[in-house]
Length: 80
Picture: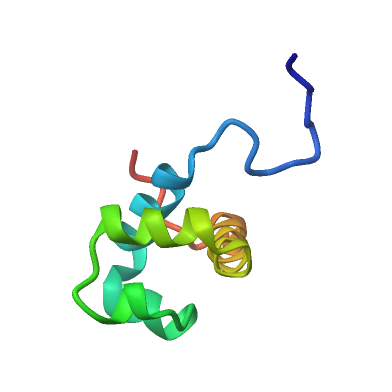
């Protein structure tokens, strides 16, 4: 059963895509400054971060909110 979510800016975007784009845009060090969680600070990887974020709703919410803010920024690079 699929529900339409027209007001959800993350609809159809995977957590992995969110994380990959944030890392590409900010890098791990700046990402850790913006969202202070250990999986971004100590030996970060996409795989370990995804595992943590899937189990930790508060951290996932912060990461998703940062992704939304990044994409609302008019100065964001438009190279895709």
